[in-house]
Image 1 (cartoon, one colour):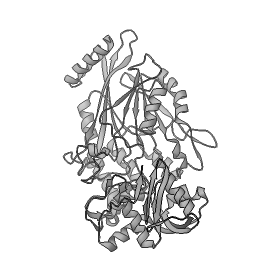
Image 2: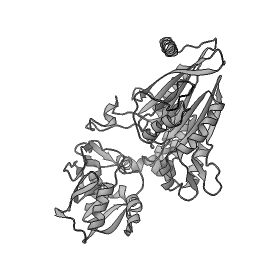
Image 3: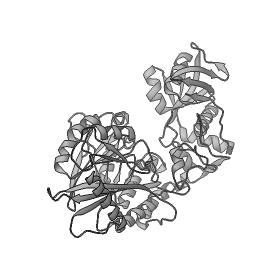
Image 4: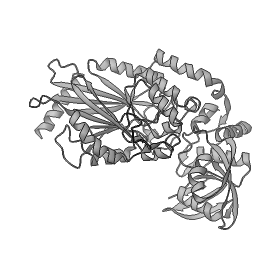
Length: 505
């Protein structure tokens, strides 16, 4: 109790004094500036006005004209100057690509070049970096002027690590260990399938963390596991001081503190978990305060404070980062800057209705003349704002380059897909309760088990869910993005639909 009172009192004094330098060396501050899941959002962006009130985006303080990597670079440099003489580490927790035309056209090169301009120090790999071939992933790692770490990636044939598992570095008088982990489903992505093994992150952490604990004053995990696994890892593997997280796009306005199940007399006896939502609309900031133990003469963490810093239009663009960005944007602006049509209102989620998904499914069904279309959840990446629709906007919605496939399926297998995968649909109405299909119709008629139906979906859904069922399909070669763009261009104006076609309880 006395230690807690001392920690809070010291932290209050230090915060009040603005972290001014302590020439006696009794205490030390380390700041972590962090991003995750930026997904190619190098330009400023906006959220639709009518986003669901229960969504994370509703809690974002600024929703219009936010983000942008050149503004992020300015903010990072500004904070680093303000924090002197104490250091700031700039960290990214993965999935820096695969979300906008920059990633579609440059396969992560533009993203890494802009991260270099921002001055990143450390990063881990996310699953979406492996949407590229493995050689491209390795080229991006080599291109980065920041250190990439990930401890559960190795070559399948040799067992050698794909990238350094961890790094231990001296920052002032503080010894800092950083290691990375990525979700096991990365194994199913293109760049990992043939030569890479993604090992169990919990097993790796249980072996590695005690080793790092012996070498460092503070242990930091750069995680692309998602908030659920981050919290579980914090509880089950004592010794991690900080988890800079990603993958789940979780907006933690303040850090979460997870006490270790096994008590250990190290620092705070628990893990500080942070995550900065998505797309670089905000920059995460975590200040760690260390006090020198007079008995051991070592720096021990005694306090922390964290928040998300909005990246808004009043932050000027860093000229150097802007020049890097322009070098890539000029090469694609003619293609992606053109307007294809108009949205009469926001295409957003309302309950179980997902108007932005319905737009895609309805467009495909109309353009290819089939009975129904299926689109997997999480395949359409953004909601669409009212107003002019650019090709860039649609590429943000459908950033993966998927093509459209045709297939025939029995009603029995189709109902199984609806119950198990719960896709968004066009031409179908269905209801699922407790993973049981209650009703399903096509064009108003109940789906018959033995009848053959003709439909479409995207190439990802076909490969992931049709192939395991033994359902054959034919790739049309038509890119999903282009088909939807052609549909909107033909319609000129499109309006959102909320018709209860998909109910999942």
